[in-house]
Image 1 (tube, rainbow, N blue to C red):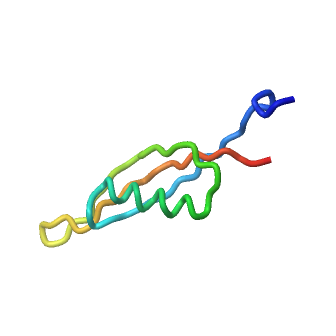
Image 2 (cartoon, one colour):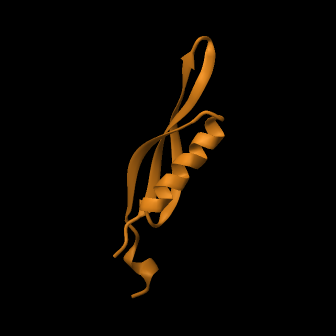
Length: 73
C-alpha cells in the first residue's frame, strides 16, 4: 500500500505572533517560530489581525493564525 492509499491526517494549532513592523512581518515571525517546533506544516490561515496603540501611534501588529501540519506515522 502506498502512502497515498493510507490517506493523511492533519492537525491544526493556533498561534499569535506580533511585530512592530507590520502584519506581513508578524506572519513571518509566527511561521518562523512554528516551523522550529512543528514538522510537516502544509499551510497557515490568518484568522484575525489587531494592532496595539499607544499615544495615537500603532506600536505593534498582531496576527492570530491557524497552523496546519500533517501528523507523522
